[in-house]
Length: 194
Image (cartoon, rainbow, N blue to C red):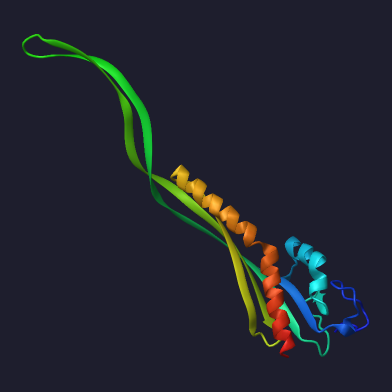
């Protein structure tokens, strides 16, 4: 149990004014471990004023008596998908030649143009997803949000440029700060109902 007279590291106020206690952890292959990613620390440093009386508690076993407690859990997932895409390859062709018929007539000719081949080219989509879930003290899921980013390697060059460009634009909108903000807003709404 934490002393209610210690100051919260998030907002600087004494713990006795807290309305919500938040613990942060990550799900790893070794189980649940206390972890605040750099994006989370940066977000709270910039946005603590938007979450008054919401205190961050560093150790999973600590609690504030009489204050609703929540656990935020980060988890990551990685994926690969591979397949084939059609890709047209073009190459200039030109040449000259001579042809004759059975009567001894000879014709000289030249040609130029573009050769078009359609190939099935292998490609890989690499995905990385970040999940952030919030649970109340009873273990009830209060919020579950995620964001994903994928990249295409190989395949049709024009398709890869379009796919990767769209993913970059999506990442500008769906970034870790928006993810954290959405989950903390869900926690705030839930704590008001308690």
